[in-house]
Image (cartoon, rainbow, N blue to C red; front, side):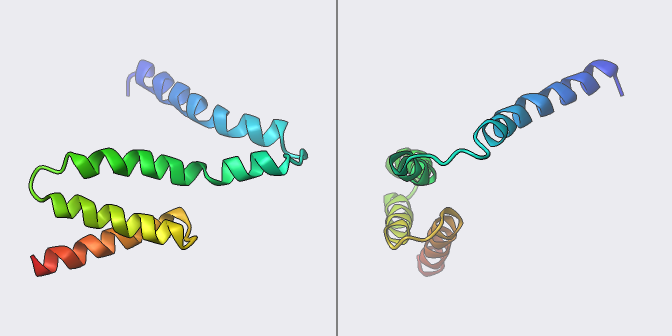
Length: 101
């Protein structure tokens, strides 16, 4: 294997790992205020919404496909499920919809 590729892979690993390690090391023993805990708790849902909502409006074949997936994700998130359950609920709803259409 070319040494340039090896160094590139190592560099990508460091660049990926460093942003995850620094907050853990720097804020390991720090208790964040409740406001910031609430903000950080909602970040996964905000990211999920940013990923899902644009695709709802740009579904080419069947607009209902996007609407049903979006509705399943919103309802599941509203009930307080974690992000993985929200995604799985949307996939399950769209799988059921695909079976009947």
